[in-house]
Amino acid sequence: KDLSELVSNCLAIYTAITNQGNDFSGVPIHNRRLLESEPEPEYTGFPKWLSKSDRELLGAPTPTIQADIVVAQDGSGTVTTITDAIKKAPQNSGRRIIILVKAGTYAEPNLKVGRRKTNLWFVGEGKGRTIISGSKSVAHDKI
Image (cartoon, rainbow, N blue to C red; front, side, top):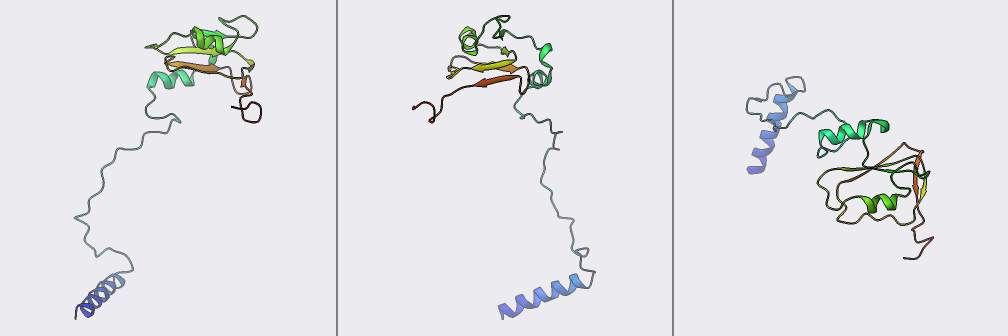
């Protein structure tokens, strides 16, 4: 009896739906609840945790950035290597330390930024203009 009752109910529902034009217009939806969600913010390409000032800094052209340390191979900057810039940066800094790496190819095999070197921000002069290369790999140097 239970199976025949279920089949009968299913057929009744199917008949009610098909008689109304193959849509669910006869199904009451006044109890429908939508999940609450915040509207999607405009996609900026930046993660949500990045502050507004950091987003502006990332979007700024290189000449307008006020760098704390400038790396230039020709000696026109504060230091000539990226390793020296990391050493020169203060430890446990409470503010953003901007290191501007001028155009050129920097062959520095083993760059290490220690745990105490906080809030360092490396900025290059553009894709294909500032190149950092190294040779620390299994193929070149056994670890």
